[in-house]
Length: 220
Image (cartoon, rainbow, N blue to C red; front, side, top):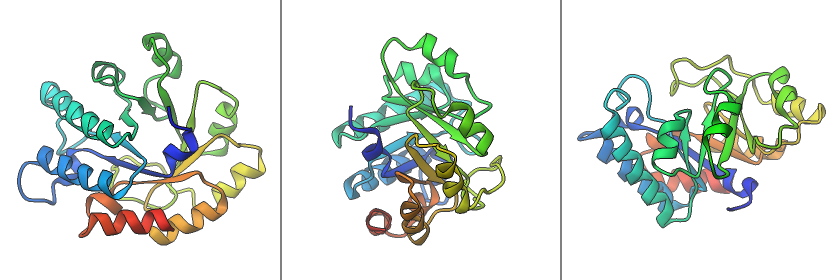
């Protein structure tokens, strides 16, 4: 398995709901967007297919799409992470799973997984970060949203750039990836503040030129 900090460098998150602006089948469009992003150099992909416009009500189709996404990621040797759904992650042999504070409990995930998976946890407050900063089974924190975002309808309040500094001042040194309203300029500032990577949804999925967008995010 790749070193976790390098995995987090440019972390792309998407599902069919993020491709509804494109004409045609959203599942096919997701695969097209993902392949372009992989070719351009993303370092991790999280399959987050949930909410309005997703395949969450059609589990067989959703699982089939997850397998296709996983296979694409493996062609490029990029880790394939599943958002929250432990059963789906195990069924498609994902490389990891990411959960929020109110999603599946970490202990439940560990009891269901026979092999070590990359395990990520969303963090939106200093209290949450301090509570889990020393848990070895958690590989990284997803910090955010840094800025307000339209990609998630149920997102928590934005924490701002200063939150990264606050975490480091309080000894939170677990690998972390920042998420939420991030563009190339913000990515550069966040890396300067000490994050190990940035996670984006619309900055790639809605980009007019995906290769260019990935290149700008990587070089920031």
